[in-house]
Length: 271
View (spheres, rainbow, N blue to C red):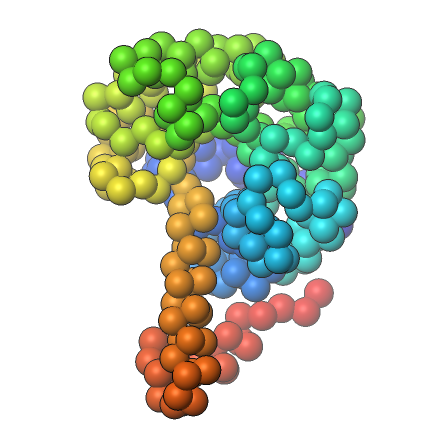
């Protein structure tokens, strides 16, 4: 399923305000449809939640064909723009990443996340350029959210993190990135410093100690992602319910806080 003709333009505009773009990251077609029904203006996936839902660990373990098949299912289920977390790009070299991105665009994505991890920034820059070229060939103004793990992985000492983040952001911007994702950053002064120095929309990750969305917007942040947080909460709740049920077989706990069968069925779609 090809993306809606206006989906890429809508997604680009959502990063320009007036409100901060809040993304409750989905892990399958059902969660994506649920979030859309709750008012999500766009849907982004969580690589961790996606992998866990298919029985794989997070961290470049999910086969590309599984990703593409399930992105297609999500695109079928929603009408809002769809961005896909592609981890390090589903390819060791730029050409392979470009091919993988083309497949994801082909089933409905108009945005993607791609990360540097512990790899040299020049490696991600080449992948970003390949992803942008894949979008251009498909006629899609692909939103490439370049994730730098300077804070998340502690790649440099704390006093050097702002400078290193900005250095990488410039490399990724020159390669064709549309936005910069800095997971793990939480201090308001550091967020403001980074957001004010990069000429691209800044994305942060929901994290303990992170300011509220309204405050983040004042600091210059344009996008806030739940990441794997909602998926982790769902797994925790499901584990607790299943454990209790398997131990004592009591049914009442299954009703407490549950979304009713009829309500779930009502938001599901057939296309």
